[in-house]
Image 1 (cartoon, rainbow, N blue to C red):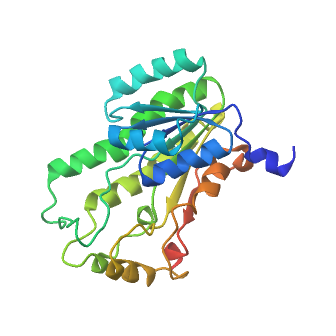
Image 2 (image 1 turned 90 degrees about the vertical axis):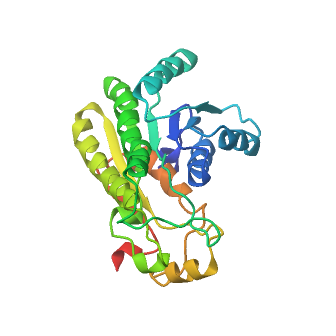
Length: 265
């Protein structure tokens, strides 16, 4: 097979959780570009409507509003997908998370001491428990069919601790570190659990994306990165295609950092 042909995802069926958000939409775009049929699971109707508009109702894009932390809902959706497509998704990207944007005029994070346990539980339910649910619901079908790829979206802060000094009088929520480190644990567990069944599982650990944050915040973050800049939102797309395609056929249990070198320091 020609090397470039290994990146081809024609006729594959993919699922992206949280696929209507900023980064999730880029995962969707990457998969569509590579030829996959993409099913987006998202809790926000507003974001889903925007996604459909942005992609001009692409006939390879299918969207569903769902709470992925509810296993019964995910199981019902799996049955619906099986009937609609007469197939099973062979690619799953666990991307969903509750992660408020850092903005000088907007978000003030609670400190570790004041972070409410109710909020902690809510964010873990979506970002980590939701990933566990989707992995075992859709991954079990992959294992039965002896083929599949699961890509979990972690973060550079799933590898290192956040530098709290850049957040001023607040702090990066403890929930984020718990979830993103947990995602890497889930990745390694899944990679070894279903490897004999032809299912690969890896994690992508992206660095921060420049997205209209305040200049002071951006300046502080960029000083922590050897390349001295935050990522552009499009810079992860090619890596996503590589990790979801046969181009990475011997990659399993890996954590791929794409962070401008931040976790190397």
